[in-house]
Image 1 (cartoon, rainbow, N blue to C red):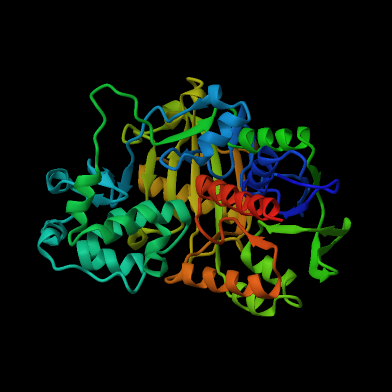
Image 2 (tube, helix red, strand yellow):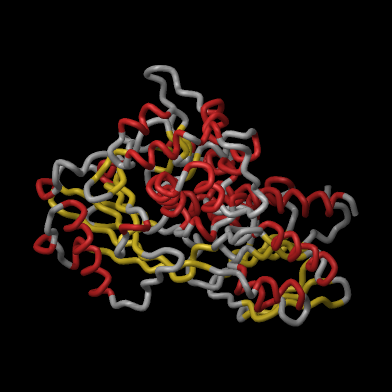
Amino acid sequence: MITGSTPTRVVIVGGGITGLACAHRLLTLDPRIDVTILEATERVGGLIRTSPFAGHAAVDEAADAFLLRVPAARALAEAVGLGGSLTSPAVAHASVWRGRLHPLPESLLLGVPTRLGPLARSRLISMRGKLRAGLEPLLPRTSTDTDCLGVFMRKRLGGEVHEMLIDPLVGSIYATDTDSFSLRGMPQLQELASEGRSLMISARRRAQPAPAGAANPVFAAPMGGMQALTDAVHASVVRTGAKVVVNAHVSGIDRDAGDVVLRSSAGEHRCDHVVLAAPARKTGEWLAHTAPNAARLLAAWEHASVVMVALAVPRRAMPRVATGSGYLVPKPVQRFVTAVSFASQKWAHLDDGNSALLRVSLGRDGMPLHHHTDDELLSFVLADLKMHLGVDFDRHVSDDNVRLTRWVESFPQYRPHHFDRVDHVEAHLATELPNVHLAGASYRGIGVPACIQQANDTAQRIFEQISAR
C-alpha cells in the first residue's frame, strides 16, 4: 500500500515491451503510483513492429510470435483484452538447408534428440554424426563450468548435431553464435544439462507428447501482429494514468536530496525509482558519472545486428519443396541468409490464396551486414533463395512487394558467464545508485515472455519497497 498524500514516482526509460509491461504491472499493483515512460524514438514498442505489406494489413517486421511455455506474455495479452484474438501457427514443422531442404527430425527439444530413431532416419546428419550422437547416453557427466552452450553441446552430442540442429535453432532466435553464447542463456538446455549425466535421457524424460488430436501449440501471437500487443499495453497504461513521453533522449542520471534525477531532452524528472529498460551500452552511458563501476561493465555488452526482408511472390512461383513453416541455414553453409519463414503458410490469416509471403533473416553475431546498401542486401537474399530453393524470384520483385527492416545492434549477446556479470552490475548499482533497476533483453532473458517476466519481477520489487516504507 502507498501511504500519505504524495504518490511514489517511478520513471521507466524505454518504451519497448519491457518498459510497457513494467508500467502495466506497477499500475495493476497500485494505480496511485505516478508512472512516466520516457521513449527516445517517436513510437513505443521497441523491437516489436508491425506494418501493412503487400496488401496485408499487418505483417511483423521482427518477432512474429511469443513462446507459450513461459506464461508471462499470454497473461499480459489476456490482461489487456487480446486473449480472444490470439492465434497459433497453422504448421509447425520446419526444415534445415544442407545442400537441399531436410525436414527437422521429430522428437527434438531445442535441437537435442529425445529419441535416436528419428535422428537415424534423417538424411540431414551423416552416419558418422549419428553414431557420435548415439554415444551420448554412455558418456560421463560433462561439467557446465564453462557456461558455453557450444562447448557443452559439442562434448555431449558431437560437432555435427550441434552445428546442424542446435546452433541453427538457437542462433535463429537470438542471432547468435552458440560457440560464444551462455549455456544459462537457454534455460531449457541449462536445466537438461544440470538434471542428470545424459542430456538425451533427461530430454526424453521431459518430452511429454500431446494426446492424439490435442491442440498443443508452442507459439502464439495476436491476429493483428505483435505490435497489437504493445499497442494494447500502451493504451492500457495511459488509461490507468501513466504518462508516455516520446522523443525523450536521456542524457544522465543523478541523485539529489533522496531523489533520483533524470535529465532528458523532455526536461528534468525527479523520482523515487527508475527502471532502465534500454540496451545495456546505452544504459552505461547514462550511469557513467553516478555509477561508474556499473557503467564500466555495461559498456562491454555486445549486440548483434540483423536485417529482416519481407517478400511477396506469386504462390505459383514457390517450389514444391517449400513446405512447412520455413527453414534454417546452419552456420557452416551460410552465406548471408540465416533463416526463411514461409509466413503465409505458417499463419493462416496471412494466406490470401494468391501470394506467398516470405520473411528472410540476414546477419548474426559475427556476421554484421548493416553496412551494405538496400540493393546489395536484396541481391544477397535473391541469390541465397535461388541457391536454397532453386527458384529465381528476381522478376517478381518490385517496390510494392519488398520490405527491408534493419535492426542495428538490437540483439544482446549473452557471452559465457553473462549472468555473473549481471549480478556484478546490480551489486554495484545497489551501492552506487540505489532505487535504480535494470530490466530487459540485455539482462536476464531474451524474448518477449522473458522481458515481460523481468518487467513483472521489477515492478513487484518496487511495490514491495514502497509498501515497506
